[in-house]
Every structure is written in structure tokens, then in C-alpha cells.
Length: 364
Image (cartoon, rainbow, N blue to C red; front, side, top):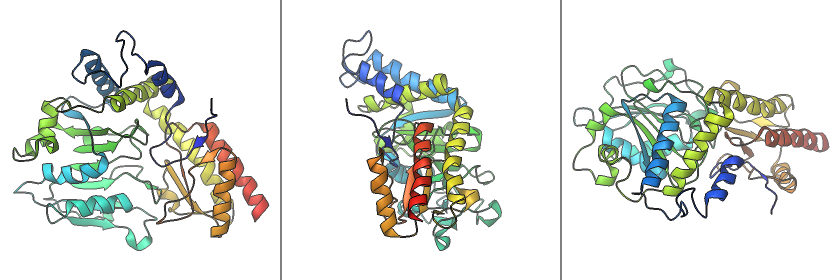
């Protein structure tokens, strides 16, 4: 058997080893079913139990009330960038506010502009997306159909620790890269969406949590697959669902509930992991330079630079030789990006921390 590395990839990302072991065990035949999860019908009772358990786990972890729908869709966040304005804009409210804190916020805003006159509530481009705004910095329209923000920017490594204050306007969040990393005050949100391949499961399923009163905005003339209300009425089974991905979401959420102890425990663990790396950065002089302003740093994606490109390439190569992979930063930012999502074990972060210290000692 090939030895597992510490995978610091930004996504698809590391999954919990107990989840992978369970999936391996069940892959040939699900217990009491006699067929693989890859083979069973999405209309079967066996799969209905899987998707219902995944939803129940999510509701338990996030304390999602009954007046919110939980949808299991496809198309990733890219499709949600279009579905949100298609479903939530109305003739009376044809515009929405967008807070642009990094690359993914920019992509969401660009797509939304195809459907109406969107407003930039704030854009951190002048600072190369190194920092987040205060509520007083936001240029909000109280008549906006919704207010969109990205809770964690994977490329720039900035993250909101709390939700922006937007009054009565429905708050819409792209939580793709930090979903399930901490408890959330769900009632502050109108809609939360997340592609699963960071914290919740594998690529192929997108989770949408939406307040049910907003479903009435979905117009009947929308393409049926792109209609939130139609998807909710079909129980996310309008078409062949991504059965394997949803099965893994069920296993991951069960792991969070029963092995981690819930999202508050997960949050404490995530804070401790990130602190290990930020302490090295902060005490390195100018050798390691963090991209994000300290108070806006991400717990999920630790982004930093070394003094030269030559040292950066050397760092990535030597780390890989030691079983730590996918550490190169995004091409638009450069440097190093260590993605330490929920499933990255503390031992992996400890290994990276120790390597960072030794690398600096030998190369400074």
C-alpha cells in the first residue's frame, strides 16, 4: 500500500482517514444492500436513507431550523454564481450588493452582473486583497435583493471571523472553503452555499442552505434544474443525484458529530492548527511574509512568501520529498499556500511547522 502524504491541496482536498476507510469498506457492497454506492439508484430506499441522514447530520451540526431547506445540487460554486441572481432578484429588487474580498468574490460579482446592475459594497483590490472591511466601510443598499460575500478566500488567505452586518437584506454567503469549520448563526443568513470538496466531501456535490421564504422568488420560467424552489420540492432528486458524493458527505458529517464532537470542537482544533504556522511566520523576521493582514488571516488557507522565487521552489520541492504536497501558492499570488482544512490532522501541520523552522535555519 502506498503511504499517504500530508496533502495541503486547496481542493479537492484531504478527507478524514476514517471516512476513506469506511468508503473503502463499503465500496464493493453497502451493508444490507449487496451493491456498491456507485451502483444503487438515487430513487432507491437505500439511497433515500443516505441523503436523509446527510441532511439530518447537517441540521444537527449547524442547528438548521425547519424554515430552511437543505439542497444537494451539482455544478459547484460556479453554477451558484448564476443561480443566486437568477432566483433571488425580482422586478421590484433587480439589484444586489457584492462584497469583493478576493478572487472568488470577483468571479461571483462578474457572473451576477449578467443578470442585473450589481453594486460593489466594498472591493479590497487596492490592497491586493490582504484585508477585510469593517462594517462601517460597506456601501450598502437597503433595498438590495441580497448581500453577497465570500467567507474565506482560498487564494489570498483572508477569512471573516463573523458575519458582516447587513440589516434586513438577506445575507448570501459563498462558504465553499470554510463550510463546517465553525458553528454559524444560521438565522443571520438567507442562503449559504458550498462546493463540498474542501471540508464536506469530494467534488461533485454542492450544498445549499436557503431560507424557505426566499424560495418564492424562484420564477416558473427559470430552467427547471436552476430553480431553487423546484429543487426543494423534488428533495434534491429531480435528476440523478451525485450519489457517491452525497454518501461521503454523510460520512464526513458523522465524523464531525461523533469523532470530533461537533463544530465548536472543530473550530478549536482549526484555530490551534493555524496558530502553529502563523507563529512561525510572525517570529521569522522577514524570511516568511504573510499575505493577509494578521487580524484577517484564514484558518483554512495559510498564504505566505519567501524572500526569493528560488527559495520558494526549493521549499516546495524539499517539502514534497518529506511527504508534504501541493504547497505552491496560486499563480496570481505566488509564494506558498498551506490549506489546512478540517481533515488535515494536527500531525500534518506539526510536520510543516517543523520543516519551516529547519528550512529557515538552513537558508537564512
